Amino acid sequence: MLKRTIRPANAMLYASSVLLIIAATIYCAVYKELPAWQLWGAVALSVAATVWGLYYVTLCYRISAEAITRCVYLHRTHSLPIKDITQASLDETDANGIASCHLTLSTAAGITLRLSSDVLNVDDVQELAEDLRALGLLPPAEKKEE
Image (cartoon, rainbow, N blue to C red; front, top):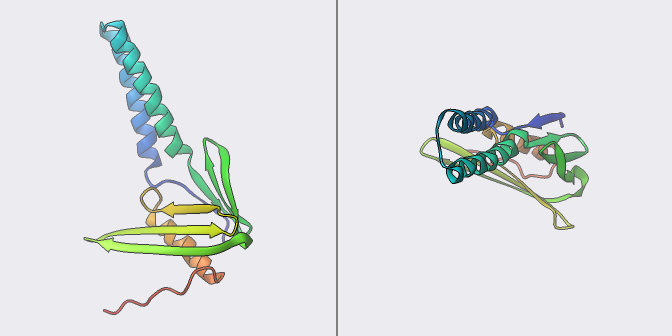
């Protein structure tokens, strides 16, 4: 299994959105004469958007031969040793030409880690699934008839 890091597909979109929200808040605070409650409301929403955006900007999965580790806010939140994986499932769909892929990994201790193409790049999730197939943790891929 190749050592790699998987990040959200739209991490830069989240980062730029947060920067635009902060810039708009600063603009309103400096150039607009707003009542105090509106200004504090804008600041509170700006802080909430920053926390939301930084979650997705810092979210990553570190893959190694030993473990799959989920990190958020530059802090390790979950680590799933490869040797402890007892159940793995892959759910792939293709609706109207849009591919979707959900990989669920579980241990006997009840720890579950779900990697989804809703946030991550579908190719990265499928590549990890192929690695898990090579290790015998996932069944072989079904062959599609054309």
